[in-house]
Length: 293
Ligand code: NAD
Image (cartoon, rainbow, N blue to C red; front, top):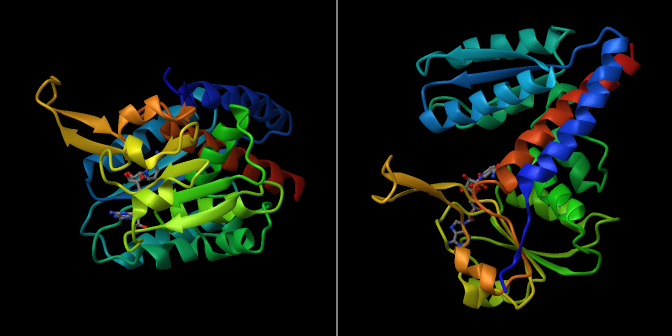
């Protein structure tokens, strides 16, 4: 029997339904949540991501400002845009789409965003709260999406062993902190590119999350029978059987479904959850800012 599907599309639409109610509430106070997205350069995948974020804003009635800048723009020009958005009281969320061109310092640019508008949750103030075990800051969208998807699916987490493969600032590290935080209570191992005998480490996991960027790295033999497996990876792989010549693959080999109890698909798993959490952070920021007025 195959694993049950961790259905990110369905979970995200239930989150959107709740957000619509909150957006309606805000409208009674004359507030429209407003997300500003800055994209620098012409990386095609980044434009696809930004367009789907903007489309979701439209669907929910969240105002969006889409700032497209050429790749040869100087860092100071980008700084000016960020400062302007920080000062604009109508803007509740600011996102700088990653990756930035080589000549820019992505972390320094994130540091400039007002932490209350940092809907990506990458500002040191927000990541710092996560380290302190405080879940009241802006939680990074993909880790938060993974957690919400597991909770929505009814997966029991408390006291279980989790292995997170990947230690990035965007996914692996904040997810590990979130998993280990009080109230969620997983026992977490963070695996990465220097981990010895990764297969053996993974085989210990009740909950295994792959956030690596290597297509179908995780094999069925790595997975404990009945484990819950979350595939964060989004990789383009060549495939001549597809009309466009490529397909999307996760970091988990789909045959893991024969061993796992739950598995998230790619696409349709963590991807829609990431966008839903971005929308939730934007609405939350609008609620907090309007209650402080
Ligand atoms: P990253 O490149 O910043 O980090 C990759 C991590 O994997 C690193 O910590 C590295 O140590 C680890 N790693 C690399 N090779 C390894 C190996 N052989 N064995 C074990 N660990 C190894 O990537 P990221 O930004 O964290 O993204 C990871 C994947 O998740 C990518 O495929 C990305 O496209 C995808 N992603 C998906 C979403 C989503 O919404 N679904 C969001 C963000 C990222």
